[in-house]
Length: 183
Image (cartoon, rainbow, N blue to C red):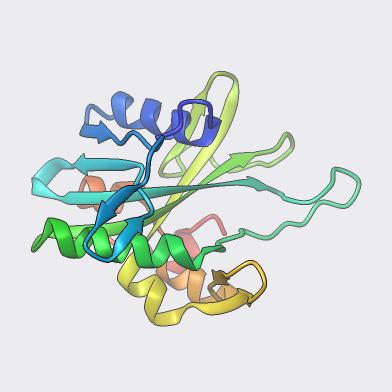
């Protein structure tokens, strides 16, 4: 975890507020495994009901782009290394652990969501929305976004279908329909 990264710091504050058991992973050095260096995860989280989660936080703004030309797209891209590293950690931790890519959206002024939106969280005067996709599902549907930057992405319709409020994984919340999802 990079405490200088406000997305990860907000995520940690959310975990604390939810009274979840977690460990923030020190990312200052890469871990070496048999196959060489592996990208660190950000958090190990134990949720209600016994959920065991390995989390990589991906910070995004919504809407993205410059203020004069905002892009109202829920971005869900990441590095291919994020996916492969998270999958390796899940393998190492073993049965029962789920790898999650948690897209932490900082909502820009003017973005209106209902107050009862799951995982809408205000921290230090900024509003954040947490949406999670299991790394298995992400990998199954991902497409190359940029070969040069080695980034991958999900098609929008698939992301809308797969993304869940973080509470779905931490608290065993029921699956929401696409109509209930704020994007």
